[in-house]
Image (tube, rainbow, N blue to C red; front, side, top):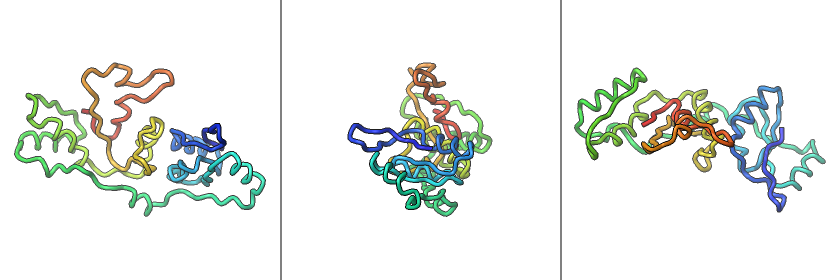
Length: 202
């Protein structure tokens, strides 16, 4: 499979959705993907497919003329994934006081329940909610890839990282449209419900 966006100068530019595209290629029985060089590391997340980074149209032509010189990279192994799986900037231990709210958040996290937070501004609702993902179970590799696919499609993966590597926390404004919440549009895009999958929608 060949994936990329061609610039007017012949360069191959970054594209979104590489995780989902490479997964589809593997599921169709393809064993090699040519990707933009900047997307190559993201493509290696999917096992069973050889990834070849391409910098320009000229580079691609050279590769096709010299197939024996093609040197691809294989999927990211378990050790590389564990190194990619980084910690949090926030911590639930930073919540001071609020014993009832903390206990409610812990119960909700343990059972994956919904939680209703009600109170005046400045009482700590957002502060506690944003730290709930830090006490949820760590992502498995399969969960990480599945969640990261959605972020890859939207172009929301962290710069220089092929996986999200943490449970998402989404906090859309209360004036969000139904389409923004559930997804859709032209072209169709995932909504906040999908972006919060596996994590917290506040």
